Image 1 (tube, rainbow, N blue to C red):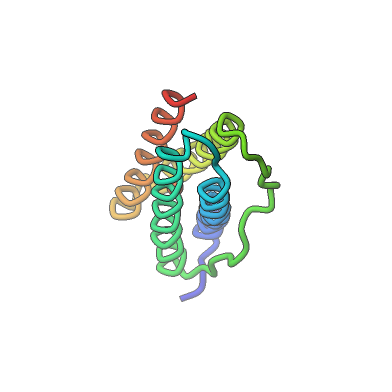
Image 2 (image 1 turned 120 degrees about the horizontal axis):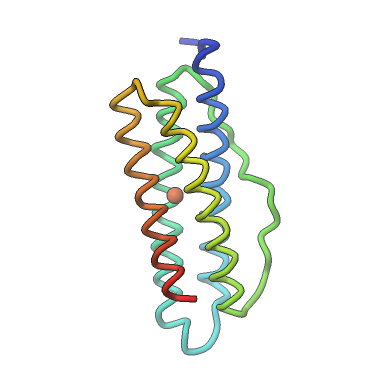
Amino acid sequence: MAATPSNEKLTAQLNRALALEMRAEVIYAHYAAYVKGIYRLHLKPFFEGEAAESFTHASIVRNAINQLGGVAVTERDHTEILHTTDYKIMLQEVLKTEKLAAQTYHGILEMVDGNKELYDLIEQIYLAEVRSIEELTQLI
Ligand SMILES: [Fe+2]
């Protein structure tokens, strides 16, 4: 099934979300490797958990794009991933990433109002992003 014109805008936004999730996987995995000092004890598993969550979100979004007849992107969002060993900068960088993801999913929710199954799927992801934002805000 090819993407219909009405699905094209939606699949484009889902692809935007997918590219952001693939970037999130990399940024979290990178920071899990490089976080230094006493904070490594907590932040390494936290970053690894968030990387795994991004992988799961990416899989859900990829499947949704396929269901809609679209072709999923295979490249991550190209926004630079800042290399640092400073945990505070890491937290600020991932907070920016999560805010952008939440904003993107919020936009998608408005587009899928008539599709209950997809709405529920995206809402779950959106709420997970909001929880991550709350958690990161507490950590900074
Ligand atoms: Fe996510």
